[in-house]
Image (cartoon, rainbow, N blue to C red; front, side):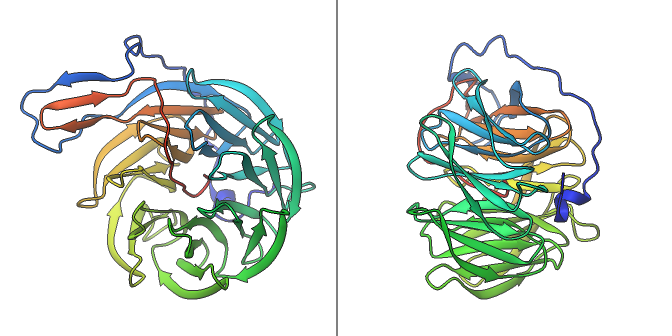
Length: 368
């Protein structure tokens, strides 16, 4: 498989995560009284399930109603469809070679998957979710990586890591209507909630390109850490979180204030940070650390790491359910997806969401 940019640089470390179960997860929301915890304190997040999927899972995206998670399996050219109610794979869709990035349209009707491998790569497969069938294939640039859909569902932005561009697809006809030149090795992409801008990480030059979507022009370039990979924008559009996975000033997350496109904070996380996702309420950021098998949980109020969750081998993609109750993490070298139950506390009451999921609007990231 053609693993391009930062993806290619990571080393496979092997191993399969054991399947985890939570015997007490029959109740979807368990309220626990925790003595001595102050207001706003957070209980530990917990891995409550591990789902076997295809070979080398990378990206993950969750449907707007929270019912399904779509996982790209980069080494076998497929997408696993997980039903979140029971965390079971209910379908497997054959796409192009080396699928990596994945995004769902706001109405949940289509899934866009980037194929970056040799042969039937350099394309985007369009899956109709009603029957989980590929209904279109769009040729894009060289080495397509991440993908993001605009909030109105009319445009799809695809980073082409090997040629320094972003392809803009019009969803009405699934045609490329624009190609935007950005930095060196564009990898991650996220669109702001109002759809006005797209933020693109350039892994080889340590920058983020800011595209104004009205004219598809680069209006700003922000210097971040070394080897930026993933990017996610907060629900209010005020900040963008960027993972820096390169040597030196890597192993960190740069926080960009979007009003002036300036870095206002840098958060140290685990080893080899990759994908990033923000909870729907904007209070937490989840970062996969590919090289140490963990997920760092950042509290946005102070931009501090409040938890580190052990998951599978080489975690890469991450997506949070629309109701904010669970995070789905792809473990590339374990061929699994870890399901994290997100716990929150208000005063002395801690809410454990167990194994249930809900509905609402989700949040995007590098490979989601």
